[in-house]
Image 1 (cartoon, one colour):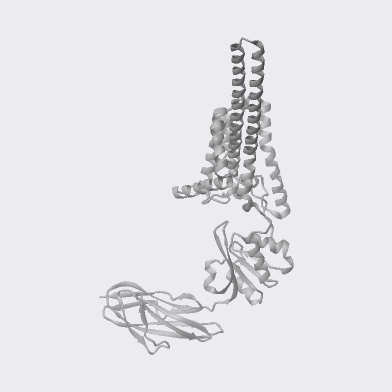
Image 2: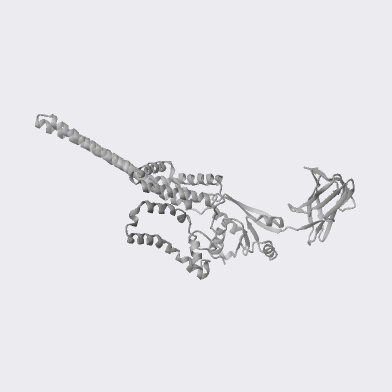
Length: 489
């Protein structure tokens, strides 16, 4: 039975920790008392206690986090053996760095858009003015996030960039603060200018009654203008604060819209609709977990077996066993080592944009009938100028006739072709294509029998070389062992 693995926490938090330590160093008030230090440690450790379910579930049989060392490895983003999970270090080059860094910034741009990023840039400049230490630490944080991703894996997953995007939201909030402070300072300057003008008018008028009347009129007009300006600026501020969620909603609606299932899920559902009850699906795809979920929780009544390519049962012997039991056998993707042995019929396909994977759904119709191609001799020693014979046997040990579509002979420079000996069961003369001798014709190798091909060759140059031969049957090549040819003067 399939047992889902516990959630594996991301190690990016640990990789970004240098930025936090740097901030602690340049902010010495953090160390002002033992109480503050202990509270800081507690608030750091407390969220990690949520991972206590890992060893509990493992001891119940649903995982392998059964030791303290394994638990430490697991929450730091590794397997319980200590091996790094999901990627590797020290094997990435500059080209990988540039490629992943480009993806990193494209993801940020697509999530925020140009307007919010301009606001964030203004906010970052303002943050340097308000708190240069925090501004520097935030940039160090983003830098570590970028460097670790580019040196860990060969692509930029969105969930690993959430750390940097969180910091950018702080820059955006500082950008809004810039807008707020600009509006506030503009109103203060207008009010101050009004007061100064009022004082000037009062001091320059000799008649008290005229002063009062004029002052009242000017004051009322100016206050009305300032009031109108306050409404305008309040509207601008409100629009600025609302623009963030509005732009994020507009830019990301399609991506977060879950009103209908994802296409990869629908693809797997189509597969389950097509396969017979009790069928086996051998999977070599990153989408295997979707099929496992459907088989385990949504369509249990179909009794579908999902065998992944990392499973020990993902082998030719198990497939033969399933074929012999007359149950349906299917592939979602297929490992190369199985292709020469099986006849596959393509039923459906899907291009998964998330991982750039072309997923092909096959039905295994039958096992390919294997032929044995054997030379009469695997080593030949001849003299320069001699005419000698080479014989190949095409042996069919199965209980059914097998069709051979073509034969292909590759001779070294030291051996020259003379003719096909008609004493063999294949006596047609070959053609030549790209320097190779070709027999493009259908030959039937009957059940439990063999065909043979006898060639007459001439030794035309001294030296050591190899003679290669292969046949095409059921759309695959079947090779003969090479013949080692030694030509002496």
